[in-house]
Amino acid sequence: MDNRLSHFAIFTEDMDRAKDFYGQVFQWDFQSYGPDDFAQIKSSTGENGQLIGALQDRKYQLTPEKVIGFECSISVENVDETANLVTSSGGEILLPKTEIPHVGSLIKFRDTEGNIVCAMHYLPHIREAMRGEQS
Image (tube, rainbow, N blue to C red; front, side, top):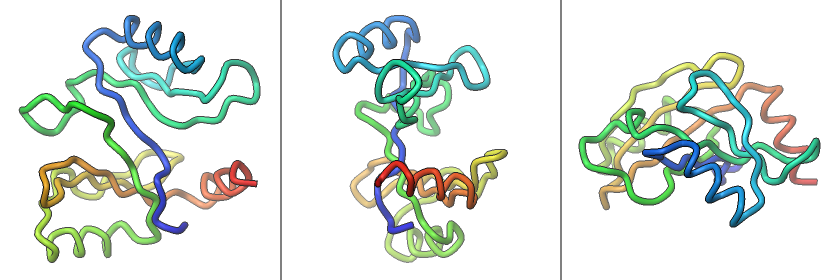
């Protein structure tokens, strides 16, 4: 992986309202994934829509202040090395390395400008699928 944007999250207060809005504006489709207050975003309706992000309840934020804007994930080769670079460069780890079953390892951190960012190391089958989407 080449340290590129691989995923984003949009925090919601009303899941149905957010689905309606983004579905109408961008023709995105949504599929359930886990709890009722979390949905995966597909780039389009139908079979060919690629997974590009998530709608999720604000309770999943790691900060007390309301996140305005998208929370982005950057794909990395090594989450542990990235965490060390974050702290040595002045950032703050908010969520230490966490395993997401069948997906990979994730950290969340605050950068020096106050932004919340995720670094994600994907399992091989996910990386391979992402490479196929780039073709």
